[in-house]
Image (tube, rainbow, N blue to C red; front, side, top):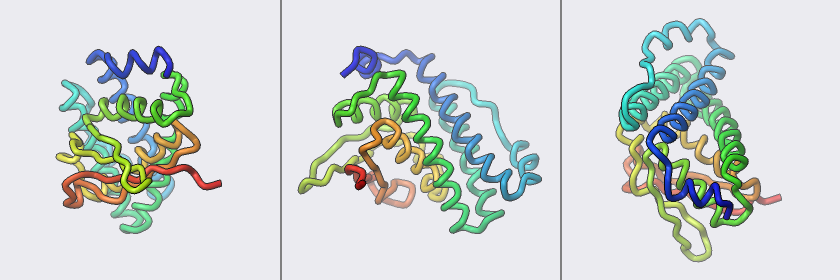
Length: 201
């Protein structure tokens, strides 16, 4: 494990957490905007009017970001219909997440071990107010999210779309690993459950 990854695992000041959250918000919102612009650009002016500026403490910033995500996903559903909105939104968010993961891998010096992947994921999830543990059940690696600050604000549809960014982040952190959510708190589950496995070539 690199020195940068070790330090970040134990110590991240509040101003860095805010800066990184703002970066995640900017990238994900832009990704959703791009999907909407491809299909109904005239809708953007109406949507942007509803946006708040990201400010305040971490919890306030998370709430505002989630509200903007909800508005974008609702707009996509209105324009594209439910199935295409979820499909196109998830595809866009996976790509955004992948880039965020690659960027974090470079900046933190993330290696190819599962230990490095887990440490880096915990750092990125701390920014979002998410806590998880890794379990090995019958040879299957499962991520159990038992606390998610965003679940208080996300609609089930927004969570379904934005969770693809998380899946992309894992791939960006380690190109040999794949993550897929199977259960979500926003859909009534007690915990979010995701399976992590090696990418099949």
